[in-house]
Length: 307
Picture: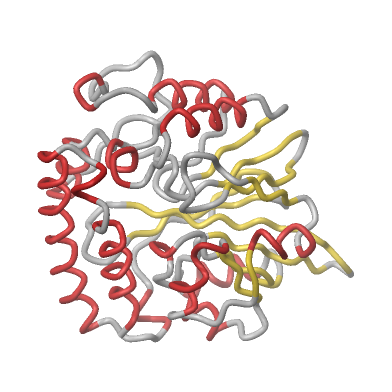
């Protein structure tokens, strides 16, 4: 089935420039980790069927970030233990007592979870933010045939292999969802940032540009801790070496985000949303972009935003 093999294809893309863009020991380490992921994905992909129930994994409750506006739920990836992924739900356009829902980075929930989400409104727009986050988009389209599937322009080809794409975020999202603004990162072209209007301010929704992972148990948790990807809000070292095109431009972009007035929340695809001192968190993350792995603080920082 296509579900987990999407990850295989995405990891293959990630490996293309490994030896050209990273020091040799980083390249070898990345190759070893990616090989492990490829073997796991191939094994899991054989068994995973494109049915809703097959995609449901343990997940948390639908959490209210801003009542009647913004919600998030933490799911898992099958076979990755406690490694989390976040779905964001934005409620907008209430008409005749019924609202529309924008879903970012979809996660298949159990029936109780879906009923709770559907009670908020009608799933209307689905954002597949990059090729790494295609796992559940096809079953969402099957469940909601009228939902509009959007993705960044650069992701259209790969996302289109899994689900019919109705348009790009750059071209259609702002006209479809009042209160949503599409921002284009500099130095990191793999995804977009979405600015959503919430009570007395704005929420920013990112995907893999920034992580906010706590330290995780198990083998994968140890690997991500070793690579400096847990325990702090940051652009991960893996991301900096293999995905970021220009660290200075990305650093400046994060500083610019921090200057947006009244940032009330920052949502990421991996880790808990930040809902306090958001501008400070962005400035701290920006300052870490050009750190090397040897100076990346595993066990200390000025202040942690990991919850």
